[in-house]
Image (cartoon, rainbow, N blue to C red; front, side, top):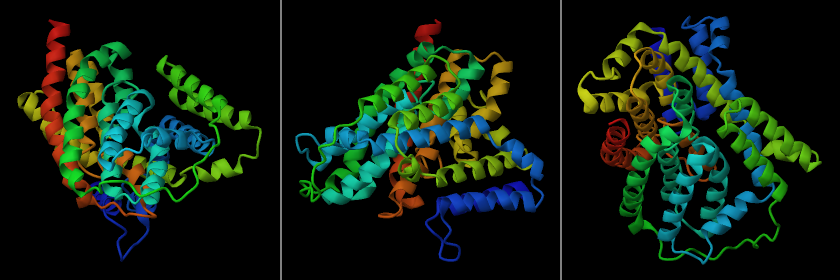
Length: 404
């Protein structure tokens, strides 16, 4: 029972606001969980090292540096400039942000989009007198939804790419239409829930508008790295190589750029790898997962519900890691893989801890607004249920059309 207990404690620390009794924040909460897991015998020290997913940590490290360089070189200000071009109303800005986040995540990975955009969106909202919650949720939930369209959109889909044998285009043909169908509904929900609380106009920008042109060299190197990943290059080493090339190409002291990188996120990931990995070997937890995430246990509806629950118990990436070997051994149909990717990704919108992208956005805003679990749940639960109701039939319909 050690592993489930430590998992529960860790998730409580990550899900909640800073607890008055233990105000250590999310990354330190994950580290505490990892240390407790070892100290209480849930996993040996050597076993804990083995649970660290080095390829994913390498990918994250590279992306953290890439995001910091993009921000330092003015690209984030450029994206924000596009979002506010023509001085849109706050409602129009909310729609633009949702669409940009969804499209960017399909091509660049949801965690990266949130890493790159969240600080800039927070600065924009603070400067222009906008409430943070609607725009934080638009960024996180739209990034998650958009990332469901492709095999490079998020880490769990990347795992599916390796286990299923599906090509980039085959997966996109099955999951992409579901995202396209669900996205307008999702945007409508954002406007319905938050539109009435937004001001009629944005406040004037008190800060001088930057005239610094973004670095074309930075953009070219970054796009080259993303293309290499899409063509099958090793994700972790490609991200590290791209980050290194960016630092070298700048020909400047990298200390200011490296200081911008969100290093606590690495701590959050590493701690969660140990906690969730050790809990995944627990007989008690495995029994629960086997009950709620068995394909075909109660048809599509039952499996979808089980995946949503399990994704928010053990997180979607570990869940896909758990299910993928069995599905591959049973020669699961392409539609089953597409449904697994779509449902576990959209399930990440249910709760604040359902997706790492959600946590990245919350961490970026913590100096100005502490996004809470129930504050997130108010919209997350609504959009998850509605977009699944729209998207799951679309995935199945595309499977029927493509497979005959």
